[in-house]
Image (cartoon, rainbow, N blue to C red; front, top):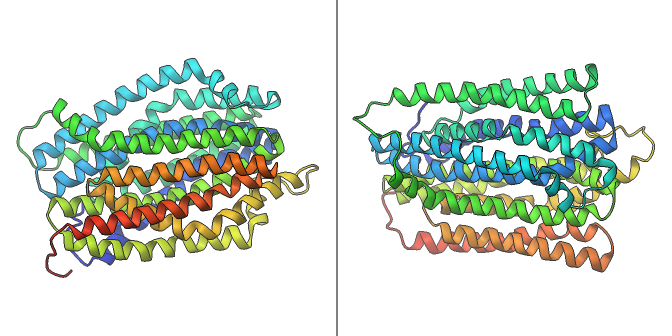
Length: 449
C-alpha cells in the first residue's frame, strides 16, 4: 500500500511505517542467523566458524546492494513527495536496470576471487574447504540479493513497508525448512546451508519483482523513459556515497575479521555467533535510519521542514525503545544467546561461548548511542546531506579498526577488539547529531505539526 508520509501526526506515521520494516529485518536476519544456528547445532563448531569466516565478505556484497538501494530510495521518495510521477517511474526502472548490471559484474568478480579473498583473511586451513563452498554458492545468488533489495527500496520509498514484510516472512520460513532438510535430513553439510539460502532468496526476489512491476504500473502518469542516464546520475549522487559508506564499513569488518582469525577457530566461532547477533541489532537500527530517510526525503521534497524537526524527536524516542530489548537480551542473558548457536553439552565449547559472551556484554550497553547515531544519519541522508553522513560513518570505521588492532596487540587478547565498537559509536554519534542541528538551523520553520 503506497503511503504519503507528508501528512498525519509525525510519531504515528513513523511508527506505522517503521514497525513493518523492523519486522522485515527480523525475518531477513533469520537468513544469516539460521545458517549459523544450523551449522553450529547440526554440524559442529568448525562449520559455524566456516560460515562466520565468509561473513565479512558476504557483508561487502550486502553493503553494495543496501547502499544502492538506499540511494535510489531517496530519489524515488523525493519524486513521490513532489508528485512527479513520470520521473518517479523513470527513476524506478533505471534503478532496476543499473542494479542488475552491477550484480552481474560483481558475480563475475566474486566467482574468480572467492578463494583468494578467504586466504587474504588468513582463514584457518581446517575450515577453508567449507568456507569456500559457502561463499561460492552465496556469490552465485548475488542477482537475487540485489534485485530483491532494490524492490524493497522501491516499496519503502513509496511508503509501503508491509509488502516486503510478507515476502520475507514466507522466504525466511522457507529458508529454515530447507536448512533443516538439506543439513539434518540430506546431510549436505555447509553446502546445504548455502543452497537453502540461495533457493529461498531466489523465490523471494521473483515474487517481489513481479508485485513491484504491477504496483508501479498502477500509478497514473504520462509517458516516461524506462532508462535515463541523467536520472542514473541523480540516483548515483545519493547511491555512490551510500555504497561507499556501507562498503567501507564492511571493509573495516574485513580488517577486524583478519585480526580475529589470528586467535584461532574457537575465537572465530564465538565471534561469528556474537557478530550475527550484533549485526541483527545494528541492522534494526539502520532500518530505523532508512525509515527516517524515506520520511525525510518525502517531506523535504514537499518543503515540509517542520515535519523533519518533529521526525528527529520521534526518531530519538524510537531509537531508545528499539535498543532496549537488545540490551536486555545481550547484557543480562549473553550465555543463553550464545547457546542458540552451539550445544552447551559438547566438549570444548566453553571457550566459544565465553568469547561471544564477552563481546555482547561490552557492546550492548552502547546500543542506545548507536541507534540514535543511525537515526540521525538516516535523516541527513534523506535530506541530501551526504557529506556529513559520510564523515560520521568513516570516523566510526577508522576508530574501530585502529583501536581494534592497537588494543588487541597491547592486551594480547580479543577483548581489545571488542572495545573498539563502543568508542567508534560514541564519537560518530556526537558528530551525526551535531550535523543534524547544523542542518536544521538553516531551514525555514513551517507551521507546527
